[in-house]
Image 1 (spheres, rainbow, N blue to C red):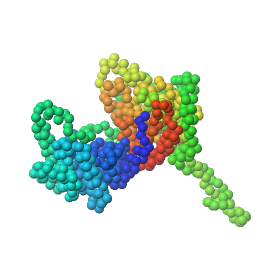
Image 2: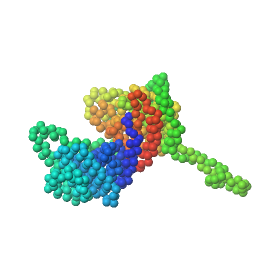
Image 3: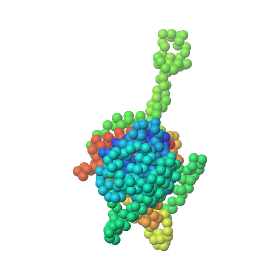
Image 4: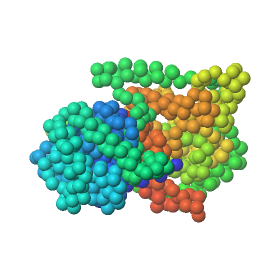
Length: 590
């Protein structure tokens, strides 16, 4: 399980809310410190706005939000990526020039935002100079290009120190850059035309850089300069075809058509041989004595945590339960008039207890499934994970929420019997999944926590943990949820995992993206079936796919096998806040 702090979650939610307000785009969000707009992610941003620099002393969060807001409002990211040069230096300059453009057309009425944008840009250039970037000819050239473009588009002066630094370079480039800068100014409100002029400027810079390399005295020096660029900038050109959640279909397409398309995509997931797949009640695979030992370990761990059960049951009741009319209380002195006692007005004029009141009790029409990744990398976390899930099940049962605890893994490492059969059959291309799937049931929705205590203790069995087929497991859990409890209005699946789907045999035969693509299609399918999927502890590769996530801060030290009581109590409270906060966002994907 990979740690994700609750503080980071809250900060990203606050930043996202500010961005949505400033940009007017409700699909904008910040997840895992990366900017997302609907299904598109901004993989690279200008350095003075890049969220990776948020810990730097010169970085100002509000100025960053202003810059991102004007970028979202005034720039077409798809067009920008289409026109961006493929090389590192060219794409970097193209990105900065586009950001300068959108900042220059920020409405003059937004005086504070304009001031923030100017200060942030100057702060980055100051840091650029302080880091020694201008000691190389390439760095000095870039500083001159950025300064000239910014001053031309904004009609403002930069600090005199910067102007003095680039004065000689600017004078030498004036005849070549002057016409281009003039066109950039005229076309600053037209992104595509502006981009064409920016590409001319980038071509000029590239020619100058190439000439700089050619001026080296020896072939060895040229190769050294080309292989080790003098400009030390943490920049990777945007990917041409990133793996992402399947894009939304056009608004004109009906919900039924979208659901049909997602269902069709799921059918394109082949399985070489499903006859060895099993759905197993974990309790039946372990000796009773061993189960009792596992249960004792979990009970000792929970006892050490000293959970305030009543406090958390009340907290989650407010979150997940709704007032429900239980009965009427009669013969009250205030409330609604009870017509059955109207005759008392005449017969007993001094007895005015003829009203009735509603008596409401909280009723939870929610079902939550805990879906646990039982891959090999999760084995070391099994005690803390089993104990924490056990605590959450007890709390939710006290609220009246129906719960399930499911797990998934495989029955073999690196392909089982289907893999051997595939090899004997000639190893055809794209055979589909090549392992034996294992779906574990630790607690079903019909079984109470007290009766399922031993079943959940089976999570401590080391042999369960092998490889993972996340997409099939999520689809299985979602289908179980749709087939039961028709009166449930709110359905949630909490997926506790630490990375991408992994079955080595399947990936080697079908490609690295085979299992991941299937998981992304399942996530899209759950959205159209009104099932909210929450990711917890998922790795960096998958975080962008989960728009709803829960924090995980139960790190254990080397001296302790379980997290401290304070960490656990804090984690339970944090989950309540995150469920309440993120669930309230409308028009979101899962």
